[in-house]
Every structure is written in C-alpha cells, then in structure tokens.
Image 1 (cartoon, helix red, strand yellow):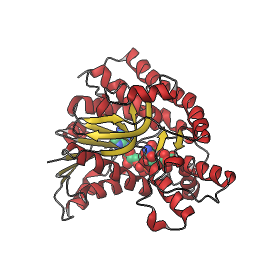
Image 2 (cartoon, helix red, strand yellow):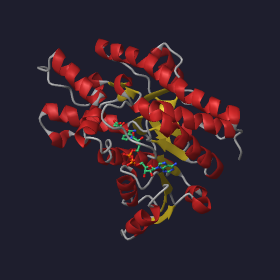
Image 3 (cartoon, helix red, strand yellow):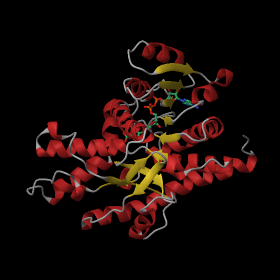
Image 4 (cartoon, protein in one colour):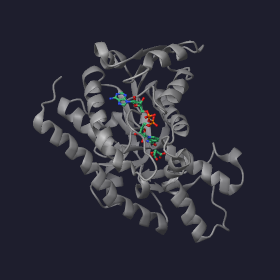
Length: 340
Ligand SMILES: NC(=O)c1ccc[n+]([C@@H]2O[C@H](COP(=O)([O-])OP(=O)(O)OC[C@H]3O[C@@H](n4cnc5c(N)ncnc54)[C@H](O)[C@@H]3O)[C@@H](O)[C@H]2O)c1
Ligand SMILES: O=C(O)C[C@H](O)C(=O)O
C-alpha cells in the first residue's frame, strides 16, 4: 500500500504529475491538495481504471491535513513559475512562504513521509523544508529530496540528439550534480553511459553544457509568459517519485541524482564533502535509495578538468542559495513560534 500526495495538484505540473501517479500501479491512494480546483481534478482522475483511490482537498475544513494523512510520499509542485526575464531566485519571495506553510502541514500530519520538492528555487526551498522540520523536531535528512530529475532527463535527451538517435535517450544516463539553477547545474558528461562523439569540439561541448544548465530558459522563452516547463517536469517528477515508491516498497539498488542534505547519516556524504573542499549543507549527487530513504551518497569520482571548473563555480552560488532558505525560516520564527 502506498499513498502519494501532490501539493499544488491543480497546477501546470500538478495535474499531469497526478495523472502519471494515478497511472503508477504501485500507488494505492492519491491525495491531491491545492488552493483551487482539486475536487474537479480528483473526480476526473478517479475514473481512470488503475488501483489508486483519488481524493481532492482544498484548504477549507483542514484539507491539507486530510490530504496528507497516511502519506508515504509527498510531492510538492506548489508555487509560482517563472516568466521571461526572471531567474528562479526571483520566485523566492512568493514561493518561500508557500513552502514554509506546506512544510508545517507535513510536519504536523505526515512527519514520516518522504518529501520531494519541485517548487523553485529548489536550492533554497529544500533548506526551507528542512528548517521547518527541524523546528518541529521531525527532520530526517534521509527523507527529504530536491527533485533535479528534469536536468538528468534533459541531459539524456540532448546527448542522444548529438548522437543522432533519440531512441537511445532512455538508456543514456548522465549524472547531473550540484543544484537546480544555472551554474549550479553540473552535468558530468565524462561519466555518461554513452560517450560523446570524439569529433565534438570544445565549443560544441560548452554549448551542450550551457543547454543543460539553461534548458529551463528555453521553455520559459517558448511559453512566452505562460509559465515554465510543466509536462517534461511532470514526466521527470513521476520518474523520480516512482523510484522513491519502489524503494519504499523494499527494492534495493535504485540510484538517481537528487538534491539532499549532506548531514544525512549516509555512506559517502563525508567523502563528497571532502571532494568539494567545502562544507555545503546540500548538494545534488547520485544517491542510492532504500526503505529508509537515502542509503548512500556517491562521491563525484573521476571528473574532467572542465567539470572540476563547473563544480567550483557552482559551490559559492549553492552556498548563497542554501543560506537564503535557512535565513528565511529563522527570520519567520522570530515573530511566530512553530506550533504542532
Ligand atoms: N524542480 C524543477 O525541475 C522544476 C521544473 C519546473 C517547474 N518547477 C517549479 O514548480 C513550481 C510550479 O510550477 P507550475 O508550472 O506547476 O506552476 P502553476 O502556477 O501552473 O501551478 C502551481 C500550483 O500551485 C498552487 N498553489 C499555490 N499556492 C499554494 C498553496 N499554498 N498550497 C497548495 N497549492 C498552492 C496553485 O494554485 C497552482 O495550481 C514553480 O515554482 C516552478 O518554478 C520546478
Ligand atoms: O526553468 C524553470 O523556471 C523551471 C524549471 O526549474 C526548469 O528547469 O525547467
């Protein structure tokens, strides 16, 4: 039995993500929460002939707590998306408060759930969730994940395009580490399962890295004010959630890049910190999942000189983003006490 919950379920990501979770035969219950439209989305999805029982909730009548009750996996795509000219950090002002409130709801109603954060800026929203959980005494670093899978999906697609065969893309695996915005997105192309053509020169390599780092901008520009990636994100979010669900059910050896807290009492965390040469509290790395969540955090391993330069550039930006999230919660609790 697995209960999955989507917070922000009526949105551009939330609806197709809820659809893909409803299509996942391992999900037996699907809770949908949003400030609007969830009864309709739930009624619609509930007609699909798959096992999950679907229920939609709005904030009235303690809807958040009801949606979260018994949750094993909570996915959060709630919040505002970018418009052209905006950075992900520009979303912080609005999304930080939304995430803080939803994290409070999770701490109260589903303190043992695995929490998968999609809302931007991920580099800062994940620390917000952690800091709220710490205030409530419910923080388990092994159960909190920033969803960076879209970067991995993009890397697979763009590398396959260069290899001239999109049918390869499902099998092309490129670890993408660091974080989820601009220069913090670091594709380790030297570790790709499929080598890049030897004819690929430095400027083509740089263009590929840039496209992976700024793939989100491509979609924001094409949508021209109507938001950012939703369908590819729903696909990526469902892929990641499916792995977490399989791990929750006892499957071993599932490995995927995700943005995690490095204090997780997991094998490899301190090796990664040593490699980074910096005490970063969060970093996206290849993570092995298990029933308790994070089992093992892979070190970067052998990387190229170009990749080492990219990692170096990512570190100060990540440190700043993390601090922004931590400070936000500290400031918020100066004027209000967390109450269970
Ligand atoms: N991690 C990633 O790779 C990635 C990829 C794409 C988008 N995103 C981010 O995901 C977020 C959502 O994007 P979208 O395109 O779905 O936006 P959207 O505006 O289409 O949907 C967001 C939904 O959140 C809901 N919402 C707002 N406040 C809420 C609250 N307090 N509680 C519950 N629901 C609430 C809205 O009603 C809306 O339905 C954005 O922050 C975006 O930047 C992240
Ligand atoms: O680019 C965005 O703002 C959305 C998302 O983070 C993405 O990578 O597509």
